[in-house]
Amino acid sequence: MSRKVADVLVDALVAAGVKNCYGIVGDTMNQIAHSIDRSSMDWIHMRHEEAGAFAAAAEAQFTGGLAACAGTCGPGSLHFINGLYEANRNRAPVVLIATQIVRRDIGFDSIQEVDFHDVFKGCSVYCDMILTPEHALRKTVAACQAALTKKGVAVLIVPADVANAAAHDEPPYTVHTRTPVIRPSDDDLDQIAAILNASEAITIYAGSGCEHAHDEVVAAAAKLKAPMAHTSRGKDFLEYDNPYNVGMTGLIGEAPGYHAVLDCDVLLLLGADFAWGQFYPDKAKIIQIDINPTHLGRRHPVEIGAVGNIKATLEALLPRLKQHQDNPFLKTSIHRYEKERASSKAAHAEHPEAAISGIHLTQVINRYAAEDALFASDDGTPTVWMLRHVDTGGKRRTFASLLHGTMAGGMPSALGLQKCQPHRQVISLSGDGGLAMLLGDLLTTVQENLPIKIAVFDNGKLGFVDIEQKAAGLVPVYTDLKNPNFGDVAKAMGLWGASISKTGELEAAVQEWLAQPGPALLHVKVKPMELVMPPSPFVQPEAVIGMAVYSAKAVLQGKGHDVWEMVVENAR
Ligand SMILES: Cc1ncc(C[n+]2csc(CCOP(=O)(O)OP(=O)(O)O)c2C)c(N)n1
Ligand SMILES: [Mg+2]
Image (spheres, helix red, strand yellow):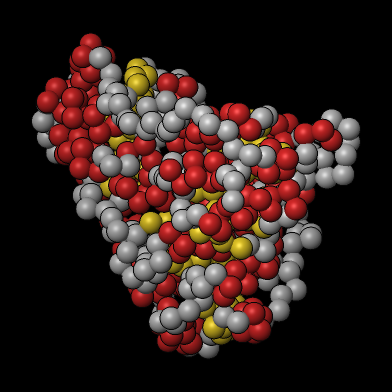
């Protein structure tokens, strides 16, 4: 059989490292589907393209290598868009093969014609069409090169007639992805060291840019005797084996991290692009180091902004730092954190008949999950509970939609993680709203033999929005969910399924669920009133945008659970 452009494209993707392609076939991608079938690439047959994009995004974010999705023209490829936004915001190298109607029909409002350049511009680092068979390899390699080096989504638009055309000889283009070592100049490092050496109350605020730099960050904290707060995206890389850790700040953080960041004299921002301006200190000097120059000073004015890879920068900075002594600022911060941890770990002495708290559910899952389990959560309360109550210990990983803030990413992300890590335990912490949004892809767990473990936090509502409305003093509208027994739904779809509602059933059910060899869903009716961010009795709660609920101060100075009545009280 003569070689087609579709074969060139698929071979180039395989050569660039693609192992898995998630999607749904259709007429304009039939030739490519057959090429994939002949290649070493696996095809994961999804039920909704959006779920395929979430799966590819999670795989690429986890491996750092390329994952692919492919769809048919018009509505098929359009469906990927929300998951691609998720991938692009997470700097996950994903290639979408967006197949297109034949070239002679483009531009005439033809059947299923969609201008993909326009559609995917906002969620990609590369978006271009293979215009002719003569440059199929070059364009495919350019797309992969962009996804891997600019770290994001590359969209390759492929008209059906181009994919079906005979392949041409092209020069041997390949991707090049070596990583340079980048650090600030000696002068910059001297200036940074001078500020740090002259201060006694320093806080390190570390983000996901600190991946692979755990030991250097801890060494810097030890030298500066500085507490270290971390972003939610930095959690997996920084919270373990770290005596200086004081947790997260921000809307889903807690008081120790919040105070450490706001009360210091010097804030050393390492690979952290935390977006909420109100959580930065106004009086402290801020030093920011980031590999991306456009991140410098964009969230808050900084004293020094320097470009560098965090590991290389700290290696060069550490010898310039003087050994600081233990100081009251560090002591207070660590003490606060230890107190907070002890109270959050305290056993819930609930009656066995009592309703299950979402926090308690997460804590029990945390206790019984494998030490290298991968967790993916839905936007909503499950994300907050995961970030606060899952201990990663350096081996586990947590995935949530933190920058894009979309619902429904949990279960499909787990599919992608399980596909690329078949021997690891993969757990999805799903909302009842989030799971229902892409429910059809529960079938993918069975069809593709992906034994993920799904916990459904069924509070009978769109909990976050419900809380937002209450926080604004409104009576909630349009937030209630009339749910089925998701355990029975799972069973009908071919998974293991169970449903529980009492605290006394929780421990045994979680153990049985996690021990299942195949895909398994545990439906847990959780307390509907549990607040994500308990408000302070002293501060007026305010609704804020996105997945946020209350103003920072209300959140972080507050204590207690199940007190929405108090919110309404406070809002009066
Ligand atoms: C695609 C999408 N639609 C709407 C929202 C707004 N939103 C954020 S959280 C949320 C509620 C999620 O409900 P559920 O999955 O049941 O989680 P819960 O907060 O109840 O635990 C909604 C509607 C969003 N972030 N993304
Ligand atoms: Mg809910």
